[in-house]
Image (cartoon, rainbow, N blue to C red; front, side, top):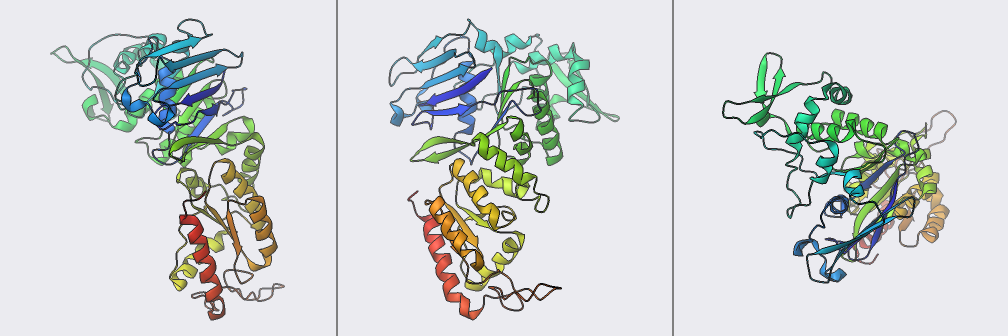
Length: 463
């Protein structure tokens, strides 16, 4: 199995970054590596690095692929559990040509690495040729334009046609019923994919991009081997949420025995439940003008999983919270869901909005703020604000000491909203007035000052 990928000088990589790869151990999701981050942070470039390593002939790194600030040259290395290394590097600074130094057997990587770029389309009319998995992996290629499609995929369709039972068994885990498709030939000699839906028949020219993408993904999985590494850029593209969930489950299943690397923008593809089994999450982000990798440690991954199992607050790392993995930075942590709801009224009353992204529906209580802050710290976030109630002022100070680059403060009241007495609980005089509409006059100045200080921190350029 492969253990790590190292990238230097490729596109936005100014300083060498290391990706630790998940190692499958038979448990669902144990072999899956999830790369998250905002747009243009380096996720697709990481998938591209795998594609470069899998070429039988040395690829060329064009001028646009080389980072001048990194010496105008590229170095990419892949290491396995036996200590073997394949190193692809520029022959010289400012040139496109490359050398390979490898301890792997000749052509081994080209037969073990299958990379699917985000543009998973094919010409609707094609010629006939049949290619097996190994030849397909070899000919995936490293085109000059990243968005180029995989022209060899139509040849895989003919191979799939001969193995329809195995292919459809996997496709059926995502689509039910399995589409009735076949390869047909026009009188002109060109071939096309024919789909039957009810009494209607249409060709691959009108085939939805979501289905085409699924064909690529299922093909990458159904006849894969345990020694393969499958890298997929944005597996969620053109799929509605229900299908994203099913593809996510399929990837978890196969990553029990195979290494699967995905770069994604979808919270449905962030496999938090698989963290105890060995799955790993890495965030690609920009720091000092270059791509930086920040990866969860095993200990912190365990804490994330623990938060997902909080029965009193099961939403702590729900879909809304997972959206935070895809923002550039500037995160606002609050104690609970009431704080999220009533914070909007506080901001409206003051005429001041916090310049950050609210984390889900809160951290599930003040005692969890340290855990969530640590998760964000390990994932490379540099602008995080934590808002606590007045009775947690001491905790705010402790968190400020623990995370000196983050900003924590306590509001002036013991709760954001005013609560009437219920049973044994007395009245709670909140930051908001008795109608929970406006900030109390005596708290306005203090709250405004704290919000303005938080905003000054959030928008500052200093990390």
